[in-house]
Length: 156
Ligand code: UDP
Ligand code: MG
Image (cartoon, rainbow, N blue to C red; front, side, top):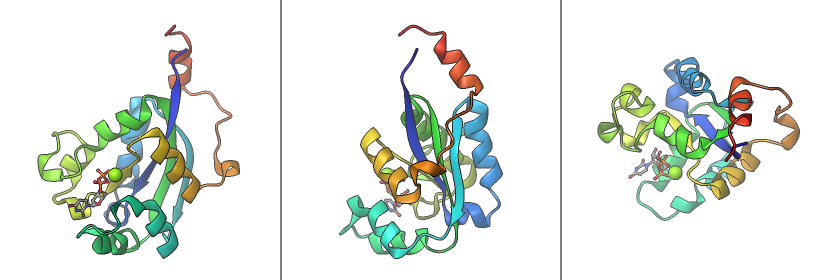
């Protein structure tokens, strides 16, 4: 059985306001990743600073903190084989103008300052970010989905 990972994905406030929640969820669902947590919330200043702590001191940091609090986000936990990297492939490059056609950011965004979606970049940041937004009792992993049925049959 292949090893599964978890990642934190968020539809950012611009994605929510533009009605892209379903479109973004659909792209991860149809790939075969397993949705195990989802909620809408307003990001607090404390959450914003924890989430983007690695960028503190960079020129874009103040605007990023303001952006992530500019409306509700849809926070999600997804599980699956290579989901951390796979989700970032589906999202596309940080800069939408350089992102591959067919990715979320290429298809729905113009500039990096409003790039509609967030995804963790490593196992360490995934677990750190999940813990900012979710209690473990809000994560529902007790059901089988197609991805698990498929990867259980692969010896690796
Ligand atoms: N960002 C920005 N200007 C920059 C770099 C990043 O506004 O020059 C924003 C952008 O919204 C990005 C977020 O800060 O998604 C976090 O940056 P990171 O480099 O971690 O990109 P990501 O992991 O989201 O692709
Ligand atoms: Mg990042």
